[in-house]
Length: 279
Image (cartoon, rainbow, N blue to C red; front, side, top):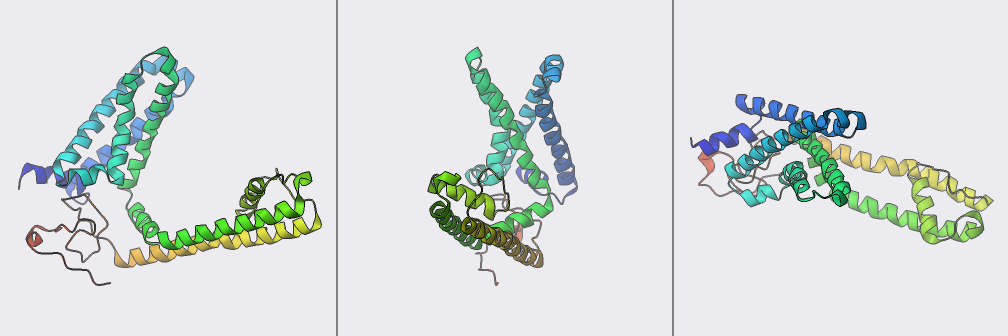
């Protein structure tokens, strides 16, 4: 087996022995680098240990840069991986530190601080190592149309109720415009209830009561949608093979070809054409 395939298996296949070791080591590095970013924002620690935290940060940045370069090198379709969710997150984990070298003047200190804080994007990489996260992402993707319809319905409701409250309450009770009234409707429908804007008339309070009651039903709808899709994902159970072409994961247990690019997941199927999977 070529060394490129060996590297790909270690980096992308978590079920192998060396793959598990690599993932655990990388996981601890990510956690340590995030801790270093947190500590560097504490003034007392920064004054005493700032130079060491700076050196530690560069060590992690170099390590993650090598890891990112290896991922791009060992995967066949480099562009597809680089533009994927994990590819972008990997890049965001190392880019801020290099960008901070471009801003060395005193007038750019605020920009440097922002760039350093952006390194907490590395926490998103933890998703890669939580198996349940793949199921949750798959459920969210599968339910995106239902969620879109639900969000559009909620937006319609807050516009209607906000406009209604603007007519009922008026500017003398704080509902000075339709956008401000829509803000009240959003806060009330989501059961947040800041209390900075409240109805004073009997009719307005009746409408507010109706919106509050509807808010409980609104909260339950997306939960039911995602729960249903999670059950479907758990029923189909994804296999652990990573596509050698585009690094996609989350394939069906019986899948022989990648759901994203159509590439064969197994060496013995490389010369075959992908067939549509039965639902």
